[in-house]
Each structure stands twice: as C-alpha cells, then as structure tokens.
Image (cartoon, rainbow over all chains, first blue to last red; front, top):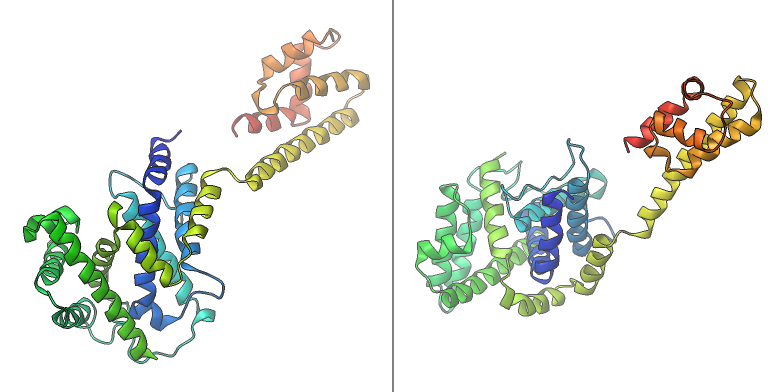
Length: 201
Length: 144
C-alpha cells in the first residue's frame, strides 16, 4: 500500500471526530463569508456534510490512483497536514459549486471582500480585519483575541505557518489563555460573517 | 485578483477553524445548532473507509467483460482454423482455470500440455493465441 495512503487511513481513524468538526466549521465559515455567499449558494440538497465527505473521498481517490493530472487530489504529507489539505479541497469545491452560473442567485454590486473581482484592492483581508477589530472592541476582554489576530496577520505576512504553536510563541500566551481567546475570536468571526450576510440581503 | 490576500485570509480561517480535542463536544453542539448533521458525517466516513459494494460490482463487471473478450477470442479461433473443437475447448478451459491475467505464454502452454493434449505443440499454441489476439488480451490483463 502507498505509505501516504496508509497514513491517510490512520489519520482519519485517529482524528475523525476532531477533524470533521474542524472541517465542518471551516466550510461553515466559508459559506458565511461574503465572497461565497454573494456569488450564490450550494445547489439545492447539497450540504456542508456532503462537502466534507466529498473532500475525504476525493483525497482517498487521489491517493489510490497512480495517475497524475489536473483535478486529482494528491495529498503529500511532507508538504501539508491532512486537515489543511482537506480544507483546500473544500474551498475549491465550494468555489466551483457557488460559481456555477446556473446556481447564482443574487446580483451583487458590492462584490466580495476577498475574492477575484474585488471592487477595491483595499477590501479583502484589510476590511475583514477592520471589522473583526471593531467587533472585538465590543467584547469584555478584547486584548488577547486581538493579540491572536495580530499574530495571525504577522505570520501570514511573513509567509509563516499560522499554527497554534507559532501564535502562542508570538503572543507568549498560556495554553488556557490561548484557547479562551481563540474562542472569543471565533465567535467574533462568525458575527462578522453573519453581519455581512444580513447586509447583503 | 488579489490571490495573496485571499490566501492569507484563508490561512487564518483554517487556523481559526481548527478545533482542539477538548473543544470537540462544545464545537459540535454549536455547529449542530447551525444545522450540521454529525451523524451523517460519521456514517458517511464509514462507507468511504469501507470499500462499498458498488466497487465490488464494478470489479465484477470488469471481470465479466474480460471473460467475454476471451470467449469472443475463442469463437474467433474456432472460426479461423480447422482443428478439433474439443481441443480449443481445452485451451479455453485451461485459460479459464487460471486467472486470465496471470498466465504468461509458457505457463499457459505448459498448463495446456498438462491437460493431456499432446497433439498441439507449445509453439503452435502460442501462434494460435497470437493469431486471435488472445495473448494480447491476456497480457493486458496481467498489467491490471
């Protein structure tokens, strides 16, 4: 058996409850994100669960076949961990699905805020960060979540991996502090997305 | 397009989505409220990780197709040369006795000889098989 395939099976077996929760959360984030929401929606009857399972299936198929080429998902554990790889597959699938012309449900003037046809180059990550910062100012203890946000931005600007360890190294937070602050940040991201969704309507 | 900004935001979302082991229950509860069905995910992964029946069927279908090719080749042999049909039957029986793909020429001929048909030589058999493309089919099978 291909060693990557064996690793794939063992990773899925070991981490599935954690992995599926993370993947569902990521897909949920993306679908609430201005870009994807604005462009359309998933086809009728298509769910986040379908997206997650489809990503796993595609990755498994990619590892099973010896063929190479466009459209095949070949996970290389030496380059990226399975969670990130599956996130990439989900993002790509969502993009395909919501950008299908026959699935577009809304005419959007204020395009997306991170995507290919942004009205302004300053929109995008800057806009989202500004919204997030604004949102965080309204919570009781904004300092630590803001520190995480800044650390994430710093890491992404320096093209470093945005990992828990790297963020904690940069912020000097304890594990417990990090978890609490990240939870607050998560909720803030959700609220920002929800807000954008409402505005688009 | 601003691919770089998009990638950066996506990296952040990936990092924010990653749930630690001790947060799983709380996150699942939250996501369930938002309409995500984790039973469907758990059932789905089981069927992905276990080879589905459909795959078995597709394998059977392929085997049947291969068998049909061999049978066609057998018919071609019968029509092409004038030999006792019972000998041809023996050849095909010998082929069918093994898995089609695992019989290289010599092994096939030897198997045929062992069946007691001494009236046809190994060379003749191989020529016979070449004539009706049976060898090609068998060799293709062995590459599967």
